[in-house]
Amino acid sequence: MPFSDIHLQLHTIRATELRTRAAMYRPQNQLLRLRLGWLLVELGLRLVQHPARSPRIRAV
Image (cartoon, rainbow, N blue to C red):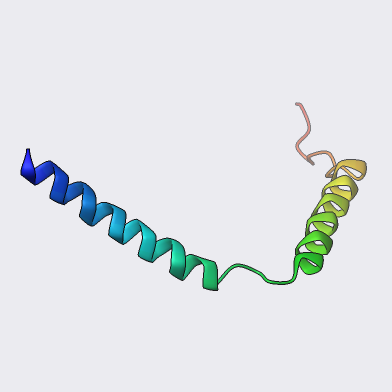
């Protein structure tokens, strides 16, 4: 089917364009990305160590 071939080619061209544009916005500094990741891990561990206070609702 000629329509399917053209449709597939258009999608391929568009996907290539989008990948090229996305590459421009990738973080170039991997060290910053690594530090941010460990910061989030540390924050998560702190939240687990200090659970929220118990609710103030008392049974009657």
